[in-house]
Structures are given as C-alpha cells and as structure tokens.
Length: 269
Ligand SMILES: NC(=O)c1ccc[n+]([C@@H]2O[C@H](COP(=O)([O-])OP(=O)(O)OC[C@H]3O[C@@H](n4cnc5c(N)ncnc54)[C@H](OP(=O)(O)O)[C@@H]3O)[C@@H](O)[C@H]2O)c1
Image (cartoon, rainbow, N blue to C red; front, side, top):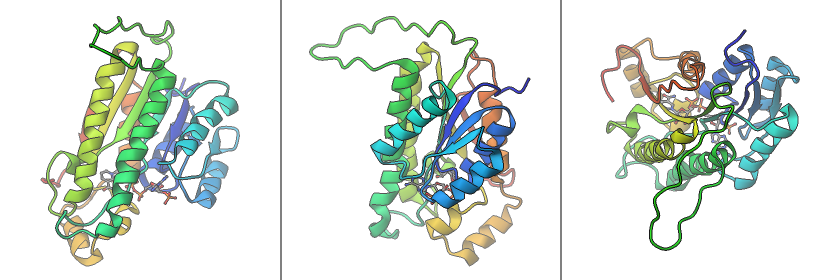
C-alpha cells in the first residue's frame, strides 16, 4: 500500500514550483489533494493532470481568511473527512535587504509569507487538535494533552516551508529572510503546543531551488544566474517534494520535525 493512501491533503502555492511538485507526489502516493494558488487556470490544469477524482482546486489568495476556510471545508466536503496533511507553502521572495529592497513590496512579502502561514497554521491546528483555550486571568497549569484515539493509525501533519535564509542572513534577500525567520518561530511554537496532541508540525528549510521563485523575487538573472551556476546543480521542486513525503510518510509516533535541504555545493546561506 502507498504510504499516503487514504490521506487528505491541502497544499497552498500549488500552481508552480515546490507546491505543485508536492501535490503531484502526494497524489501519486495515494493522497487526495486540495490545491490552492491565485492562478486558477494553472490549478485547473493540475487537477486534470492528477485526476478530478483525486484533486480539487480552491483558487485565491492564501492570506485571505475566507480562502483558508474554503480550502479546509472543501477538503472535508469533497473527500469525506478533515484534511490530515496541510502543506503551508505559498510564498514569495524579495531581492535585497531593508536598505536596498523595494519597499513597495514589503507588505506583500509579510502578507504572503508570514500572515498567510499564520492564518493556515491556526485554522489547520484548530481542526486537527481542537480549539485553543484562551487563558483569561492568571495563567493556569495546562490541561493534560490527550491525542485523538486514532492518532497512531492516522497521522496528522502540518508542514511549513521556511528557508535557509530564515536561519542564516542572506546577502541576497535579508528582508524576505526576516519574514521566514518569523515563520520558523511560529512553526516551532505551534509544534510545542500541539505535538503532545499527536499533530506533527514540521519546518522544512530549503536552500536554492530552481522555480519561478527567482524571477518573482526580482533577482538579477545574470548575477544570480552566475551564483546558481557556481553551486550547480541546485535543487529541483521534485527533490524538495521527496523530502516532504519522507517526513509525512513516517509512522505517527516518529517526527522528523526540522529539515534543512540544500544543494550539496551551496555552502551558504
Ligand atoms: N525556490 C527557492 O529557492 C526557495 C528556497 C527556500 C524556500 N522557498 C519557499 O518555498 C515555497 C515555494 O517556493 P517555490 O520555489 O515553489 O516558488 P514559486 O515557484 O514562485 O511558487 C510559489 C507559489 O506560491 C503561489 N503564491 C504566491 N503568492 C500567493 C498567494 N498570495 N496566495 C496563494 N498562492 C500564492 C504561487 O502561485 P500564484 O502566483 O498562482 O498565486 C506559486 O504557486 C515558498 O514559501 C518559498 O518562500 C523557496
């Protein structure tokens, strides 16, 4: 039996790059997938490629609460149960530091990388682990964490795409790196909260992956291309997808919770 048979997945940013490769790989390995991104026509094409019995599209901005809710509702309504594997992948880069990046793009970088991740992390966590008790007044000792009775049979995963530049300062994109550093913090803090309830919250930090990312970030094709050539071959989206499926394919009680995957010849960041 395929490792992901019977699982219901949601993948954001699935019209291109890593998200698309993850959606295809999950479906090939038996999962049903909800795919999200803004370009509806690319999602329709992907659904046809995977097969409409195994995939459905929810187009829209992943930073919009209504779209986040629609992704999770569609997974449940279309495939008969709540998603048990959510890949928080939608994101975009930005060339430069706080000093030399384009400030007109700052809000979008924070919105798509940090706020969209926060919204989906919260919504997915609520459905997988139950609502979080808001503590009013003096802090009380936390209630004992009890995982759902079927958690060993049925893994629950939230996988978040961070970046090597969220951990190591990048000469090319430190403003974007600041947003990813925030994503890293949110991911690890959520892991600590809901890991005891049987939900694996995993941070994957890729190095350089050849995708639409470089153009969207505004890297100069010539000089960044020279950098990519100097560490070639860089990663493909399919190689990152394989890493993610290795993680989500583990038995429920095994959590590979943080992975950095770089091209072998990339020494930094
Ligand atoms: N490539 C790298 O070197 C690299 C390295 C480290 C980490 N990462 C991270 O890995 C993730 C995927 O990157 P990638 O390389 O696959 O980039 P990509 O090829 O540019 O794909 C980005 C995806 O995100 C979608 N997207 C962008 N804004 C969105 C929004 N507001 N709402 C919904 N979807 C949105 C895009 O689709 P639409 O335009 O159709 O919306 C696209 O499907 C990102 O979080 C990125 O930061 C990438």
